[in-house]
Length: 488
Image (cartoon, rainbow, N blue to C red):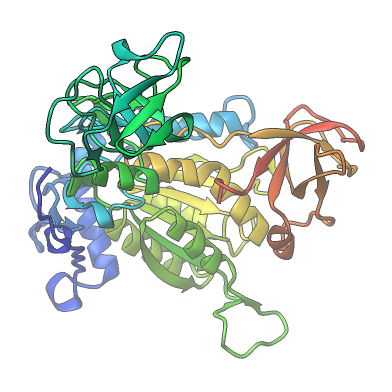
């Protein structure tokens, strides 16, 4: 750690090719594919250049660095059912193929909220740094405490936090001491001020006290040399305060994950533009922006892409050239105008295309070049369900978090609604978790469960998660619940 770290040490710099220097987006995509096929030599037209992320110079062969550690190629389908992949298998594949960023830098602790620690942070000191009082009271020697009758002690002075008592204390003395003040030499016990009788410059201590009470030992919280924040942990307010309490000014973190995202559809229009029958305002891109923002990634908004194969292809090429992860919404079904799957098969690799959940069945996962790709459904609720259940854990892993895991149901509650359910898929109902008159947790559905009803997500505060082999839930049954707090 280095003292005096400034924001300039880790400034975000983003270099994008311009038309005169490196050609249009499609040509940049061709360069990327040439380099991936021929990593040992540059493109004949456009030599390689260093890329920079968060002020860090990346290796010249960035895509090859990633590929060296990649596992075996993704299978094209699930052996049990090529149409519907079980969600556990989908998450297993994501775990196996997502790789974390490697580039690191040092930033000030004050700017570190939400960043992922790149190296174990070691405590440079004991915490507390000195043995001190846990109470306001009187410090004395534990061996001199009275056994059967009260005893009078002389009070030679006062010890304050930051201003210790200057001399040793004898067995017949007790120093007035404040919470946090260093224990004076010759003392190891504090008697609470409420338990003594004061008479001028002396104090009477009753029997019944214990040697060593109300004292915090040096290093009781942390020992010098101990790991205080391990590599792979996301820094939250508690970690910020902890590091500051140790005098740490700067922290080594991974660079921010870069995520490009776009919506697809000729019917999609941005908010604020004229509306007409058959058109839909673009809610998904705003939802993705909000969800990505909560994860602290660097975002690249590519806007709305029309339902033309060449437009979808150009969007993929531009996104893959500029981001670690690519997200799209819409275009992942089997309609004639849905070109995402065809273009992904052309430019990259498809790991899976449909999973056995509701809502959110048409979820795609794979690679565009060396960028991880998630193709989210077009329906707004399905976008949020698939993002939180699959994409968010993957992004946390790619950002460098060690134990990103999957998001599991956190609590159980009694369901007061009837929930229709067919075996063979995991279902996520939007719901409201609350307490009944007895204080027990109960949960109720928000009502209609259509995947296009985004207001039900706004009304809800949790998901009810119904397992793959479950059937219809009757009122009074116990169900698994994922509260939105901490999930979103």
